[in-house]
Length: 350
Ligand SMILES: *[C@@H]1O[C@H](CO)[C@@H](O)[C@H](O)[C@H]1NC(C)=O
Ligand SMILES: *[C@@H]1O[C@H](CO)[C@@H](O)[C@H](O)[C@H]1NC(C)=O
Ligand SMILES: *[C@@H]1O[C@H](CO)[C@@H](O)[C@H](O)[C@H]1NC(C)=O
Image 1 (tube, rainbow, N blue to C red):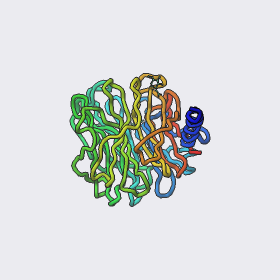
Image 2: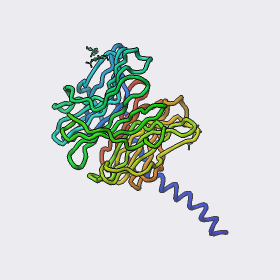
Image 3: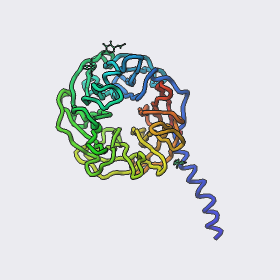
Image 4: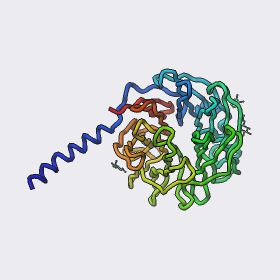
């Protein structure tokens, strides 16, 4: 009994110490990533600068713009405009930038006609890709990998990655009728000009709303990857899940769970690898807020994304549509919007 009692007092302390060793800490102050805008995303370019993008709104237009950092995310400056249109008649959003092995930069985004106005379903849906040959400053149209007629079902939230075989992988979410949504993959072997047929890799066996994808390799240049996405439980709450591939997207295994709270929602996730750890982010209203408003939280995996712990709040309510960018083997940027401005917060593991 005595042995048991002492074990009971020391074990929780030990567990607490182990857990806190995994908690990323805020490192320096929060910096402005982009004014008047939301859905911040950023990647590292081959020249070591950081290229970011977000949706900027002014009194008449929505624009997908780029920003740049040459000091590893400590400051950001406006760089260019990918596309702009009048927000009353057109919907632009979910921009994601990506550099090809040849140095050209792509931006994929949702690009929907609003022929019946902002409050009605779009009258035409597209995922569009634009190309920049000057590292994100000027842009021209390249391709439309996905498009579909208007109505309740559309295509959303593209994400791009280079495959190990030199091709390009595009992921996005596609609504499939009666409230369902699937995760889709398409490939390009000509730098994003033409695209393969769609391959559905999550959601085909459920009517849940699988969406808002992010994908990360479990080690540098590994064919093993984890895709993260939101889905829903039976009570209508959003939940955060993963799918794994061991062969660079040729095949996928069954769903894993990152986080659920049976009385609140967690969604809009992203995932990165930070050294030997994987970091997942999501928004959640478990501490307050009317979904999809919530706080930005991150969780950490030390087993290549199989199990998740160390839930940490990066920013309390409201922190929306967050993104992540690994800086080195110990630190990363958490990107989120609060109050109409997008911010970057450096986080470092002790
Ligand atoms: C708004 O978008 C329209 C259509 O693309 C464009 O002609 C116009 O210059 C844009 N206005 C602003 C202020 O960006
Ligand atoms: C602006 O939106 C309208 C209506 O959806 C569309 O017809 C037009 O092509 C768009 N212009 C640009 C520059 O994308
Ligand atoms: C789950 O959400 C509820 C609010 O609905 C909250 O009170 C509770 O703390 C959350 N659970 C965790 C583990 O954060």
